[in-house]
Length: 176
Image 1 (cartoon, rainbow, N blue to C red):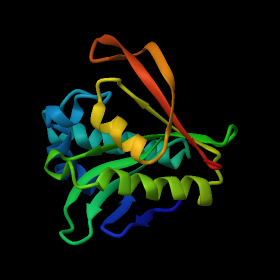
Image 2 (cartoon, rainbow, N blue to C red):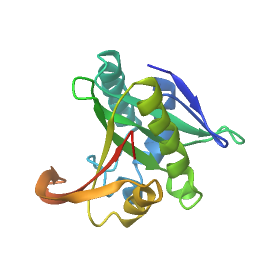
Image 3 (cartoon, helix red, strand yellow):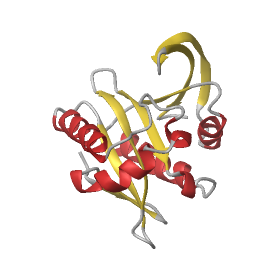
Image 4 (tube, rainbow, N blue to C red):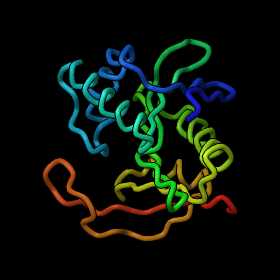
């Protein structure tokens, strides 16, 4: 698995424990975690636990997560990656989060384009999926900008923060 990816403005590198303080500040913001499958963090140790769990999944080749860093400022502005890797069926699921202070700058699509290139050209995958709550309009706009196809709504598909939520399924195929 490639440990670093670069775009015009961003450096994506494998997440590591030294990122915990910066990621805690991002993941403790309720606006950022509103549509994530975690509650807003209250202690930095929680960020460390998440990073360690993701590192184990990465070592097992089941998932991988990158820290998103602005190249000019060297500031950590979020994370993105593959929530699961299914090499048997040649597919993966994207996940991403951006610090509120960096919203509206086109960082999410830029980072995801890099992930898509990696998925299709380096990992040899055929399908990339994204599951989004219907109310997460900003994330839906990102996927539309990247030409993902809306496949439908999975009714009460997940339990998030104690309640069942619908999930919109989007996908992009290598040939799209």
